[in-house]
Length: 134
Image (cartoon, rainbow, N blue to C red):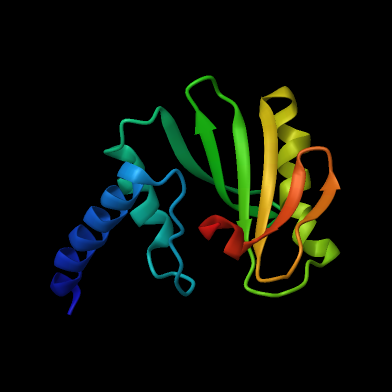
């Protein structure tokens, strides 16, 4: 039932807020179209941090899952992949973001289920999802 989703949404938002109180990074994982971006945006809206959470997709359907913009307008891209390897196509979104953002672009990270961190170019890395937990 649609009405039942609201208590879960609020409970999840409270969990995210609690985690952010003592942790610099919180991973929100789930299947496509489950509301991860909405939950992240709502959590950031009530945060005391001066940043916005955006999504990038252009007319060619090249996209970046999350774009974080700080108060100074600087951008960081975050792409999340479930696979253990990084393909050339996985780099399209972060590279396009860097290209269009120019000097506002700081870095992009692709989080993946691999075994090694992979540097691709200045400001573009693939990091193991497990890196978030130390």
